Image: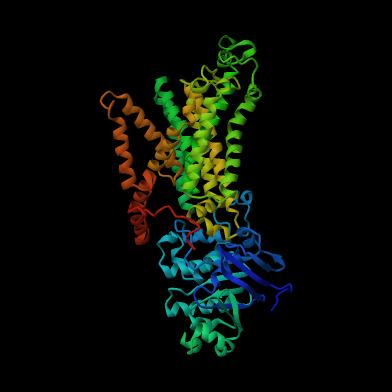
Length: 254
Length: 377
């Protein structure tokens, strides 16, 4: 677990200190290409902070985060994004005054320079593929609608579409099913299973049913550290995890 | 979307054409001069719409760029005045009065017409690039940007007033020659200046429109909506903001240069706080998210100000009336005149319920608090 090898995404003994509070304290994580990894743990375990450090929103105090051999520690957010890392935040973050179509155009970010984009008019992306994306998430009738008018559920789906338009190698998802109906959660699980393999996914979730459905390998965090790692069954059987998080009912009971 | 763009281009072109046709109906040189002045201020408003309306940078120091452009033009024209009004070897008169004996080095480039015109744009652009670099690399956002830009405006203003020996101080730079390009003389009270300014307004308007219609424009609007999110798509937000601020400064510089031509002097009030805050009001009235709306807002408001303050009936009350009008606009048309027109258009020509519901919502004033990026996640 020392994670020194040159892997896909490696967090090696990563810690972050917020004025004396160590939100993440010596976290080791090694995610292989194409894997769908679930990150669970009680509130305050440092899951979201771990994602923040990978995408550059927070800078680790110590340790090394590397992606495809490149050290991400001191890179700015946009540079990390250019390495192929995309993020969905817990709070819906879309461009509310832009239409759904325009949101997708912004997310389609193969070219990020100013001069290059100055001569790009209309839709920079392949229109058909963006429309297909909108269809995939059920927003094909809302392309001209400002994103601010979408419902909460639709906004979540727009965010998935943004990530798909961005097409990053590694996708970080923070509580993707929050506020979704059972049906939508099922649809989300299907989407994730389809993305698995082509993309690497790290999903932070509280909905254990959802985790059970999509998760092949689960990492459990507790108080800023990795508590356990393994398959759904292994995690369910783990005494420590039960004590810290799941309770005696196991995953289905949580 | 392309339909909307086409409609915009047609409307923009029609308005510009109408503006260009004004001298065929108006003969009075005094009125033409007044209109030219409003148009130059309209260019300044376009600049603010680009940075504030499209990118969300509330630049309260927009007049810095305007004033710098204006002084560049004045310095160039001052060195071209007939020798009667100047000291020995063409030394500007106010320098003689201040016991300056030789022309200071930074006046030298203004001997050349091309250099003068170039610097009128280049100085504001470079100045804004530097300022933007400090502000946006340091990730300063929101109200702090407004405070910093306003403070910088005050500093530059005081600097110019303080350096009376080289800048003319409070009096500014007066008694200028008329601009002459390719044998064409631009008389402040003639139609030539009007055409020059109306032409410049058209060019600036369409240049700004092209930028907002490009993908850069889309990214700028995305930055306005949710700055932090844009970063995670790989765009370097700071550079995009510096770009917006600099282009806007260049346009404001053009406006300032032209303003000097119609006013026939440059003065510290051209980069004064009241002008700089005034632009914000014009743009808010016209509609900050519409370039044409902003320009027309400036023309209408300054025009109204001019008309009211000159009429005898409203001599004492005109500023009250203007203030009342602003309050009404802000209350009932949060997206300004342009927003109201667009909502009306959508209501009249909108197809189906969807367009209508969008129009209703837009009209009802989607008055969101200025989104504070960064705090959202």
